[in-house]
Image (cartoon, rainbow, N blue to C red; front, side):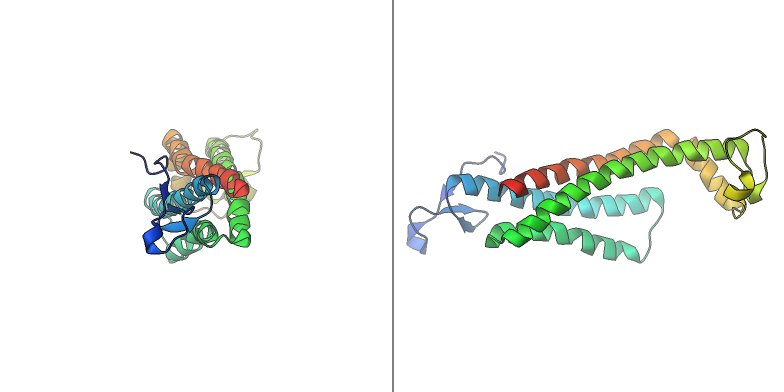
Length: 196
């Protein structure tokens, strides 16, 4: 049975809990309405933490931007799920508010990531069609000045852009696959964090 929808368990009175207490993930919470929200927020926090780690690692593998900032990105990314977990655990309105607000900002950011990925591919298609490396013009009458756009691009950078255009479908699918789960989790985090 899915733990997200598992029936709530009353706390054991013999272990010192009040008779009307309900345990969620081992935490003593109030009534059943609050218990359901606490369970959802904690479950979303755990899922968000997993998505943060996976998307950072997959982004590094697929888009080849592994750097010393990867560890830092994961640590910073885990602060939001930590706010949700500790806010629900300790009934801390400030942490829940931060979890909720970051959920909304994260959902907006995921939409921006998808749009910027599509926009980048569209822009690079035009650049590759009209421009060459080192600012040279391959085809006149284009919507941009090649001298301004590619003047600092060497052959390797130009070939990277050309390769990205060649695999545009895969690139956009990758961006969507990384951003869509984050979008869904962040929307749910905002909704249930706000309710809690």
